[in-house]
Amino acid sequence: MTDRPDLEIAGHARVGALRFRVKPVVRTGGAAFPAGAHDSGSDRENLPDRVEQGHVYCDASTRGWVRQWTHERRTKEEAL
Image (cartoon, rainbow, N blue to C red; front, top):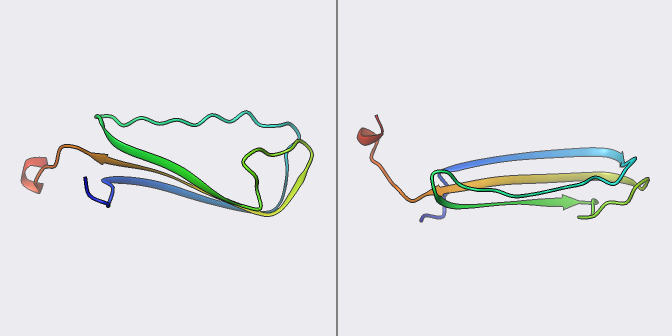
């Protein structure tokens, strides 16, 4: 497996102020198909992993990503 993934999807969001009226229910998970190595993660700024109902979070941001590496490597000619 190389350090560079075969597929990577990332997103970023930033807000000036954010308040949760209700505490969110959050689930995370992932799988690779076809079978291969994968990982995912996120970074947060001014936003805890477990937010509190009614609390105002200022200048918050979050970034998330999903990456996958495949076991099978093919040449460009084989892929066509």
